Image (cartoon, rainbow, N blue to C red; front, side, top):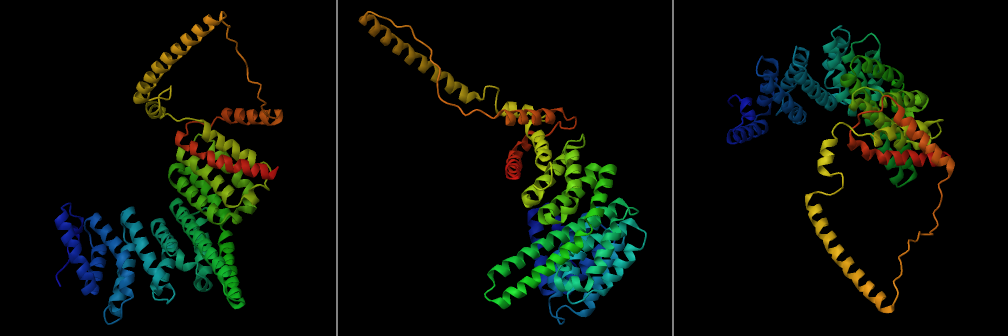
Length: 450
């Protein structure tokens, strides 16, 4: 078989690209060993970065299936060569985008081989990378663990290697580590916590659908094991929050925003883990949401509060002042316009009518005026014939209206005033007005709390 030209897969010419795709698909099915070897060679040789990134993506997509082939089709020698080549490429100095794709590829294959312990060299690589003192290599190793999260939080796998994995991640969160290492460790822990939550829900469903007592006992044991894994990982939450604080101080729109988004996902998936630190989280996120930082950062902070509120309202309503604090944050997002109001003015003029509506409205007004004049003339004529013209009178409706309690009215005015006085509550896009849903959610919790 001749060598594959991977650059043709990136050709702007549709015919050339489709022909190259057909050639690649045929080759990977008929000669998987050759294709795998050429992918690894391209990743380890100097060349076009775009082509190397494509090869990393193709390796992630197709190598796991190739490893499932029989040893007659995909030999042991080829397997070892592929694994060695991937670790060599990951250890090399590459651009961040290519390195991220290599981490994903190694993590995907590592997850597939974890149960059978089919890649012991990967563990050696982890130990070396984490102790090398090279932040780039350290970050890559931890990122690989993040991509292996689905396999690592499996009950059997966690019993075998969970302690070591947790130690690596906790070490990555320590204050002396580089920011990229800390952020990678936080992201990896978030991935594991979210996957653990999914496993726990699956176990709950199996428990509910178990046909007999034996099945229920087995499902309960699995659910308990997944809860234990989540609780063990949850011990890292305080250092994760410390990493968030540091990232917000050093790079709020980069590492800080990423850390916020990861923690918001954790809050949605595993809200009960936040119970010991709920007061600090609410205080910090509220202040951050109303700070003068970048808009995306402030929105992410507010979304974290909403995630906790929606995921576990019973926990939130027990915290004194939770409703008032979060409501003041969400009102600030709901009542402020950003600098992009010109688009809204163009979409909906001040009178609420566009050009077509104005034309139709003017025609309708003319028609209404004509009808009113005709009615007045008829009425005047009738009254004249009767010898009397009555002067019209104005009557006010006497319909009952339920008064708003003074205390609630004053409380709302005070909340709105306090919100608008906050120095940081400025410049949020009008699109966030859809946050009226979260406002309603918080208000509902407030009524339940009262």
